[in-house]
Length: 478
Ligand SMILES: [Zn+2]
Image (cartoon, rainbow, N blue to C red):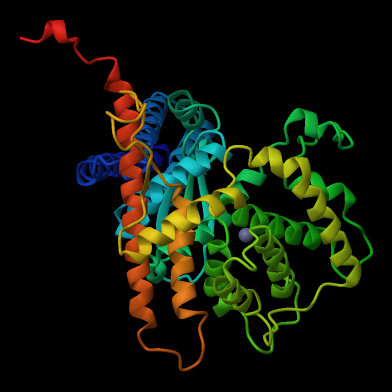
């Protein structure tokens, strides 16, 4: 009996170690295949994190193997067997599947988007890396998070090792998207909603948490998302749980709009259109009814004050924010539920939202300032990327070491180029001009070129600051 288990165990251990070795080899191969560019940085970090996970897991199995040999207690022997078997069973989800995600083709458009999106995530969420992975057979957008806790499911010690190497609370945020939608840069704006999900599950800063009733012993500190839980009413047609899910979605829409600007509304309208039917269902879902979501989005668009200033663009945006009408995805919330959602959202939009977005908000003022410049360049067919700030050394007081130009906020580029497309081509209409798709692709190319160049500019400025002090004095010249 005991010998039989030893035989089975030997086969299991050898096979699992071989899989670990394969994972190491695959990761090394991937590391060579990925570039050195800034847009690849998060992916490279993820690969080295998975290497560490593989090593820790391999060591765990080897040690269990060594512990098994001298063991005579049948119960302990089977528990060691079970430990290794559970590692082997968890490997597809927590290790091998992750490596496969890194193999999926990545579009250039997402590569361009990765660097500014990571920067945005870093301003919102402590210690996060952002990765984009396509679904091959799923139409939705979703955030999946790989963290120390998930690695720990694979083998004990992984969480500690990962957090020692990459910092406490390291999170790899995987923005999953439908594969066919990878090339339309404007639709990538919806990723901001997914980032918002990661942002609002963070705990509230202590001074804001203090304003809420203190949590019962053993209960976690309130997060931005759960702060509204206490006030959710009972006895409505909708459960308190549903109300809180709706509130979370709406809060993420607000954050998405404030991170990206009006382009978020267009992306949202386009990618969710397929989810709404004329008949609709009769069940409450985790997402609030479209009329509720679009009303909130419309409120957020109004903050950018485009009326009387960009009327053509505003008309197109109005079209998108009414694009749910005539469809019924699900029942309308009860009046009491609406009332509570309004109140909870108003509360969220106060000090909590200001604190959350302190360094990340795309403000209406920035859009107003950048828009004329972006439109001027885009009209001339030039990818809008920078704003020249210094012109002539001799006649101006421009000092050596001053900046000559500064990159434009990438969200101004995204919104500005999209606005130009909307101004020229309007919102979709049945039977509208057949040249629209090509015009849209052209707009994508222009926005992409602009964002890419603005990233180069940003890096060049950072690099210049670094090398400035290294320049040799004239006396040292040969
Ligand atoms: Zn959501």
